[in-house]
Length: 215
Ligand SMILES: N[C@@H](CCC(=O)N[C@@H](CS)C(=O)NCC(=O)O)C(=O)O
Image (cartoon, rainbow, N blue to C red; front, side, top):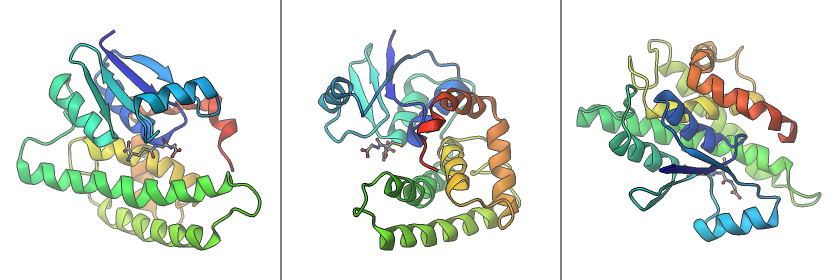
């Protein structure tokens, strides 16, 4: 098969790319990266020394593509389908990219900080960093709530790359800092994302691994 995705079903950034692939029924060969398995870990670090999943490999074009936003732009350019992820208008595209960055950096980022701190060994916790992450996440959720009162999707009326970023980021954020009561617009947006078949499928596929999520 032309496309290979190196990923893990539980990983929020992997889900961001899975949504893009499932939106357009883009065929790909799945390679699950198991960081706890020495061989799998070594193989993946050989492919991408930074060790961040997911990574897309395009065997037909001989390209290795890391970084979720770059992967989705690559898919949009070389494997387009009915759902387009980048608006054609340059100003709208830039605004959409800002939202994609927002969800990656200010929702997914602090959410990951909170989750990964739970996995640290006794004595290795970073409570200052976690408090800071919680404050950043609260501000970000407040901004999402304000923005989503009048919009269906992050960039307006069309589903885009920013929604691929938002879906797993908000889903996991709601696990670590439930926001249904405080931010009803943001929560209604999360519900719309969860009803989207592409994200519903990614969530279903993550279910068998949820026991590994540190609650
Ligand atoms: N900026 C990267 C972030 C990817 C990322 O942080 N992936 C996490 C999983 S959700 C990861 O690989 N974590 C493993 C680690 O940091 O050791 C992207 O957009 O692809």
